[in-house]
Every structure is written in C-alpha cells, then in structure tokens.
Image: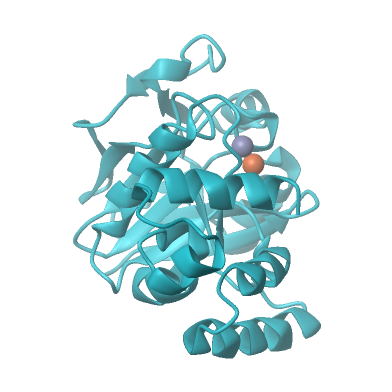
Length: 255
Ligand code: ZN
Ligand code: FE
C-alpha cells in the first residue's frame, strides 16, 4: 500500500498536507499552518494525527503546533537549528537524519535561505518531497534569514532529486510567480505552455501544486540561472549561477 496525501488549502494561500499510512494507521501533518483546518481534514478522513513535521519556524508553518499537540497527543519533529523558535518539539532533526511514518522513511535535507534552519523532507522511494517555503511552483521563498548564496545551494540540492519527484510546496503563489517568470524568460516555450495551463487551473480555483521537478527545472527561472536566454535577458555575462540567482531573486522582491 502506498502513502495517502491530503492537501489542505488554508489561511490566505497556504497548503497543509496530511500524509497517511493505511498500514500502520499513522498520520503526519507537514507543518501546522492552521490547526482548525487540519483538525477538520483529519475528521473528514477519520485519521488520527500522530506526528507534525515542521519545515521552519514561521507562524504559518508552526503556529498550530501547540493546539494540535494538545488536542491529538501527536509528537513534533522540528529543525535542529530552530530549537529556539520552535521550543515545543519532541525531536530536533537536521540533514543526515531520517524520520519514519510507519514503515516509510523520509530523509531530512538542510535547505537554509528562507530561514537559517529550514529543512525539507524527502521520501526517496516514493519520489515525494515536502519543501516548505524553499521551492515554489515557478518561484522560490524569499531570502529572509540566509544569503542568496545559501538559498541557491539549497535549490541546487533539490534540483538533484529525480525528475519525477512530486514537489509539495507550502503556498499557492503560482499565478503571481508565472507573471514574473515570463519577464525573465519570455521566449521559453515550455514556460508559455505551463502558464496557460496554470491560468486554466486557477480560473477553476484548482491547486497548481504538487508539481513535477522535471517540469520545474524547465520553467522555473530560480532553478535556471545557467540558462543562456536568462543570462542574455539579464545581461549577466559569465557571472556565477549563484550571482545570477541573486539577481533574479532581487528582481522578484521588487516585482
Ligand atoms: Zn516561511
Ligand atoms: Fe510560509
């Protein structure tokens, strides 16, 4: 049997995710953006929450920890480097650690940049990744605590996952990201086709995520600082990938 994933739109543009293992009966919540919405989703499926896996300390990711732990008795895994800002976890984890959902295993990746302790969770055998606010569909998280160089290294690490990996980000920012992406690489035919598909989904109020990593690599400007077309557009010459990434991130910050 495979994992069951329930996507929960909540707050203004967040996605919570419940991951359920029918064999063990365990259910984890990736982050805790909105305790009420997560409790409703659990009730709807008849699932019992056993763990929360936090990606980072922002309120729209860890703000529901206390209420969910109190109401369900679940345990909490949180980033080791955010033990001060997420003080209520039962276990602190970092790259090299593994977390278990029944017989399924996820690997922890350190992805600093958006926050310094941000981590991602990768189920390698299932090709499923939960990436919090590091990678978005056609975008990436704002660099609040780390440096653009750190954020680029984090995205470069995610880029090495298999192309069929289903990326589960924590926000629905795709339509806005698409408008920006077209200004960075207007001639990218894959991007143009994708933007059309995204508009159609959003018109029906459908989610545009999860998304496959291989399509993201072809269309997301933040994963493409090596693209000749983008370098020409930005007059970036032979700058490093990390410097071109920083330039794209700065443009998006004021878009
Ligand atoms: Zn965040
Ligand atoms: Fe967020």
